[in-house]
Amino acid sequence: MKSLYYLFLLYLVFSCSKPQNFPIEFHGQIKSIEETTHLSIEENKIPVKKSIIRKKTYSFGSTGLIENIYTFDRNGKKTAHSFVKAYHKDGQVSNLQTLNEKNELIQDQKNVFDKNNYIVNEIHEGKENKQIDYVNENGRRTSGVLKNSRNIEFRHFYYTYNENGHPTQIDHHLPSGKKTSVENYEYEYDDQKNWTSKSIYIGGTLKEIIERKITYH
Image (cartoon, rainbow, N blue to C red):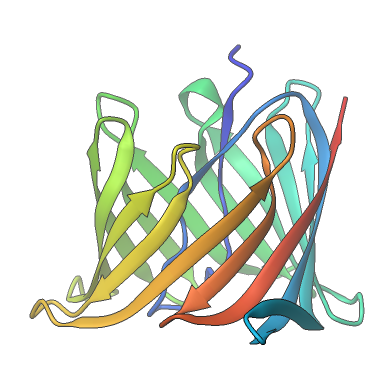
């Protein structure tokens, strides 16, 4: 079993206009992750964290694979529980389900892989039905097309990465080709090359800072 495993995050999973489900690589034997998202601004070009938007905890099994993601609101109330139903090769997630605070199934994500073990389709069923088709080159996702439940395209997006394999920019376009928005990401890393802080900019304006406390075995 490789020490590098993949988690397909559900950050803003219910947003039909901004799909954020890109593969994130974890290094080392991780036991758990505590994640806090802050509403943030820049003051005199210095990032400033304001109020907490949400918190998440990630739990990993004894094999090092992600098993559960718990989401909480700013007051600590659990709002969602995502759990892995099935894995593909090398620990990639093939089926991820999400329950709300009443333990009702609200999202069922199935990932479809090609012969090279890259995700080419994400199928989301539940509160919102949608599908995302991806193009992969040299082991990295380069672009995607978001479709609604009627298989109609309404968003195209393109990825740029840093040397650690994490997206630094996502360009959003309409099917006509018109660019509608740009998202940029800045990271800080620990000694294992796992990111511990991610700043999110939309249209050049800082919107959120996500911080992670990672516990290793």
